[in-house]
Image (cartoon, rainbow, N blue to C red; front, side):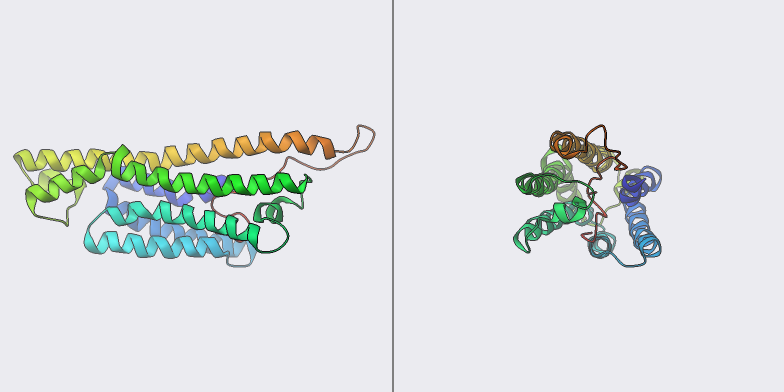
Length: 242
């Protein structure tokens, strides 16, 4: 349930994109992020830092995309968010006696201190790689940037709605626009399925890694235990970091 809430704006962004295009999807993402912050405020009785920062970023980068009619700004937003997470986990390990991941999970899981440090470092690396993976898809993997530049060079227009190519161009220019739109769709698919898949796989790997050490500290069979499965920090609303 928590992971679904975390990915709520992304899922709505994806649906709106498939129905109405990137600009409508960007507006939808801004509204969804605002709703997510409001829900978390109602649910926990406080504003959490990183959801507010994420909302601010989607307003700024999404606003630039809407104002300049250029998708590249909103495409940068996932990278900035992931790198902010990396900075939060890295900074948390340098400030205070316990790394950030231990502060979030230590109340429910007991493992040696070196394990927490390794796990915290793994989260830092994960967020750095996720940010780079997004940029790779924007500029290389999807082919979007090259296709967009080719369209701009051919038309001399920078403010283009790629979801309405037939309404704006004909012939070779329309073909270039449709190629850019197809490349844009590749990035949108990666934003939902690729990044969500990376996150789920990483969380599963984290749980498997922790299980090796949690077993050593569990009570014996003769001692009852009411502890449930170990929680995992979420990439969106864990503790107060997003």
